[in-house]
Image (cartoon, rainbow, N blue to C red; front, side, top):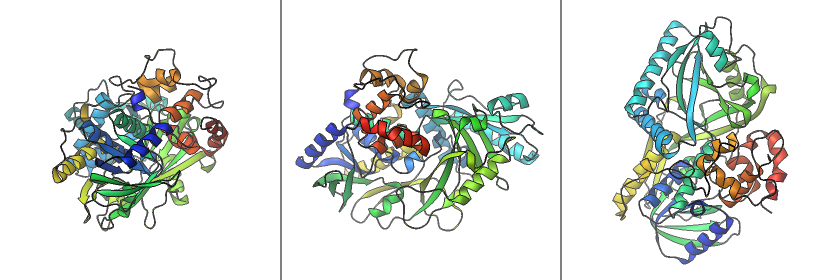
Length: 509
């Protein structure tokens, strides 16, 4: 089973050759972010022949720039979007209990009750947390998976986030949400599970001259092209969707995060959740992450104009994040503490005037004049639901012979129900390896043919040489950037990136 899910250069080349010489396929998916790979998995699980093409790497765009949270929809409930709030809670529960319990874990979120947080704001936060408990129960997610909200005293609040302000601290309110070990890892796991079920996952392949049933595909590594016929072409390119349907109206919104050493926040075990002054439903989060980091986010800024491949944070966003979080810290953080920064663009459906923060996160499924089906908008948490929605539409309008959707119970590679491993993991395995690979961790070590597989790639970073090897042999990494920036997240800190690029190059030679 593990080899069926293995993505690598040899498989890619063989499947490109087969595609060029074969007949029509059922579904061609353009875009290798979380929505695209979700569609590929859904289509393959329905028994359809499916090919996904991505002109860069898996999770190259928006899907790797998130807060790494699987939100339960609380924010949307507060704004009256009951449907998306309930769906988000349901999808979070599916990920945490069935499809990806190895990749999504509960994260405590602390709102410190400081003098700045007035009585009305405290009441609103508490009411919101209680509403979140109701959503969790309605979604059927047990408290053993996602604990309920509670009030904590000042001492426990300080234990959760040691650098929180102590003067006037009146304890805190704690709720839990889902946290991904990494968003790019989720994308790769979904893509590999799709491959396990027969989907072709082809990175560094660009689509052009696209219509509702044809596309020209070009291997950007060799320059060779072929024409492909499909019964259905689905555009899942996010903020770039307008390239394949100029009639689409998107309004990209930029979300920025800063990266810190976790020690700057006292090595917290909870996310510090800080209300944005003057706002009722916006917060800044300082979230503990893998590799001993804390990510601080999130902004919500209009991003008009051409869409860059790699968006950049603005100085104003950096200043905003630091100012807000310092209102809740006893020891301030400043620009010198920032080890790295990243920004992503949300593919919001254009709703005309107003702030991007107020635009609905609902998705939309549309068809162009040429017949290309596009899915736009939405949010990472609902990727599976979005894929089901667009496939249901495609099956109906294109009259595809397909089984009903099965992905709500289909475990991703590495989950207990889909270990994909030749040997089971043991308690002696590094905790970080288990956190990133779940029940597939043993296979990462068993499959390694490199020297010193259990040795960290460089001192001070808990990524093993075996993980770099697995990125190439099983996870479809074809370049140094694929390994450093997406299969692992070492590249989020430029100084760390510089230390490992030569090591990564060894595994591609």
